[in-house]
Image (cartoon, rainbow, N blue to C red):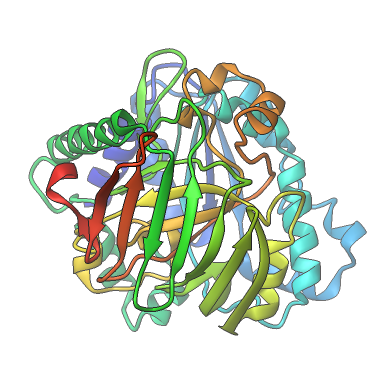
Length: 403
């Protein structure tokens, strides 16, 4: 099953080609799976592979004992090789894992500073990704402590990942091709309505609205690259998304699932906006971490994404909170603080970031952090430019118009 999963990631999600460089970022605990990835990549004709290995426990100990100046010298935070391989137009595979709560005894300001530094060292990668030059994909692999946090064995967590990615089915590629078509049609319907505003409301207290930029486009997790190739950037995916006018966000949102951020848990939190900016927040758990996340860098206190996921999505109906955003964001509607997506306005990847920021009001930021706000009674109304109100979500799910 692991080999089948690896093959779908390389051949169907990333569409790796012969002689294309490959960049793999991963937790060293899953070297066994990376060995499988490597063997298949070699079979596909890939010879240039760079391994960006991470050991969360060593990172924890280094953060505990070293000062910031010393930490910046280490490859855990200096991501210059990302830029080297971006210039080669490598395919980037980010194998994500969680160690929930590991960093709870690390000073949140120090952790924030190192996160900000790491993001600043891979500007070329971020620029090429924004311009849809790079094939990239985020997929998950389990670790012992992540499984333990979910009261599972590692093998049980592997099986959950295989299930939500349809790897346990006979033809997962066909299933994801069909899913791609459904999401494409849904995104096109939303784009064609040319909504100027979205209004959200839920019984948990969520009550906010966002305006959408001119020439707004809705997208799905299947990204069209500048060379015409389509890649699946999140595996799995259930969302359609766009980027809002970052200056327009008003109101309050309440989280519907815990957020695992930098191996810290933030839970039962709310965030308030005025004129687009976060003006207040509260969390029952992880409030200091939430504060650092919101204030991480310039414009990290403005929105860059709104994403729609039905409450009855396959991952949600699995009834498991994964404590991993890759899965949890595809079980609920979510929004993201930080950077926006150029592809969410017409011809956006060919427009410079300053113009997108100043004229289209797409947020420009080094960070991008999603958190979940979808509930079983979430209602979303789209307002058209001629002020018609079109229900998009009723009681947590898309209306018939968008199914």
